[in-house]
Image 1 (cartoon, helix red, strand yellow):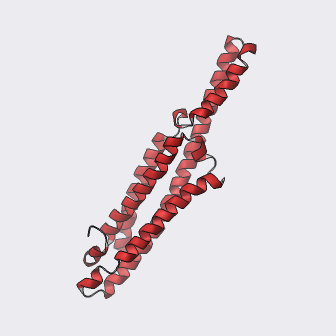
Image 2: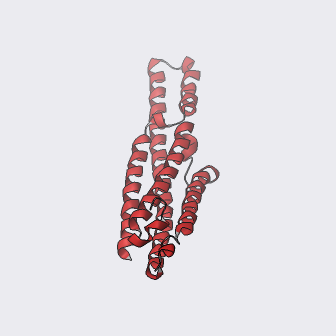
Image 3: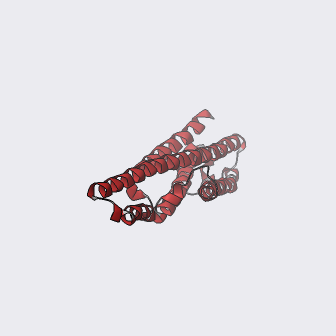
Length: 191
C-alpha cells in the first residue's frame, strides 16, 4: 500500500515543484501586475508634476517603481500560498483514490472487476476540478489570499488558473496511472 501512495506522492511533488517554480518566475515583477495599477500611480506623479522640480519628479517615479516592486513581491507570495493550498487539496484527493483502488485490487478477481474503479476515478477527477475551481473563485470573494488575482494582469490571472487546472488534472491522471496496481490499470482512462 505504501509503495502505491508513495508513487502518487512523488508524481504530485514533481508537478507541484515545477508548477511552483513557473509561478515564481512568471510573477514577482511589476510587469506581471495589471497595467492600470502602474498607470494610476504614475498619474499621481504627473498630476503633481507641475509642483515638482526635476529631482522631485524623479523621486516620485522611483517611489512608484519601488511600490510596484513591493506589491509584485507580495502578490507572488500570495500566489505561491494559493498554489500550495490547492496542491495539498489535490494531493489528498489523489491519495484517497489510490487508497481506494489498492483496496479494490485485493478483492478483484475477474477481468470485469479490473475496470470497476473507472467511475470512482471520474468522480475523483470531478472532485479535483471542483477543488481547483473553488480555490480559484474564492480568491475573488475572500481576503484569504489577499488581492492576488485582482492585482495580476487579467490575462495572466485567468491563464494561471486555467494552467493550474490542466496541471492538476494531468497530474491526477499520470499519478493514478503510475500508482495503480497493474491489474487495476484498466480502471484508469488510457489503461
